[in-house]
Length: 319
Image 1 (cartoon, rainbow, N blue to C red):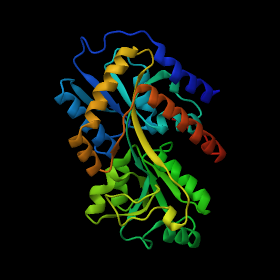
Image 2: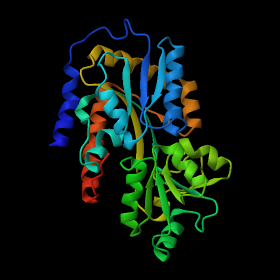
Image 3: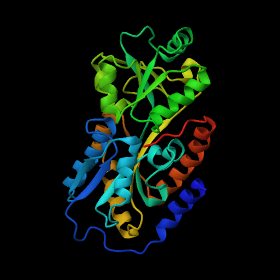
């Protein structure tokens, strides 16, 4: 029922009446479900800065915690007047419906605006670990059960769920420690409180380049240009890919004209060659498209990941 309602709502939402978009507004808020300083936050701030340069005053508002639930509930309750947008991902639009026993919002509370980027999930580890890649980590985990503490930015975020699926595939277990975003999780890793961390290259690249962390494996079909020495999971004998994706959504009831104008503004920003170069330098691959494209894409991702997560028989969490 959740899947059918979610899918139909995404596509049906585009029939809303058109109303002038940014005619009388002063500020557009881009709500990020993670703390300031994380990789996703940094990327959204790039978009906000360039939107502001083009005449649309855009600010980033961080509302971290509970795997995006706090931010999602906040935006779901906001007026659909084109002033508030939510940075959405698999967690907010799909995974939370499986991971939590009750949500204060429903995915149908949002309408899609545009996709903004994607990047592969990775696992990073401390430099003093007795393993230097995923294959060696699996061997260590089998010989030392219960010895690996694994951090993540949140329970229902792909950088936790993809490692969980991998662990089932590899026949190992780690002790999962969720954090309220990537930045505090990486700090815990650097401080020796965890051993490995599911993340993206955006938030961890500075620490990798500084020689403080090592990328153990990349969940993509190819290696990343930012860390060409880091092997993929497939190279190490594990057939798993998991791409993080990000987009913007608006409260349900936001007029289509408003959605289209925001879509146009954001797509112009992320298509600019200078912006693309800056985004790729931080490990993010810009990806835009129409609101309809984003709606169809999120439906495909919902239909792909929700059954997989249900098959893991994960205990429901309370937020």
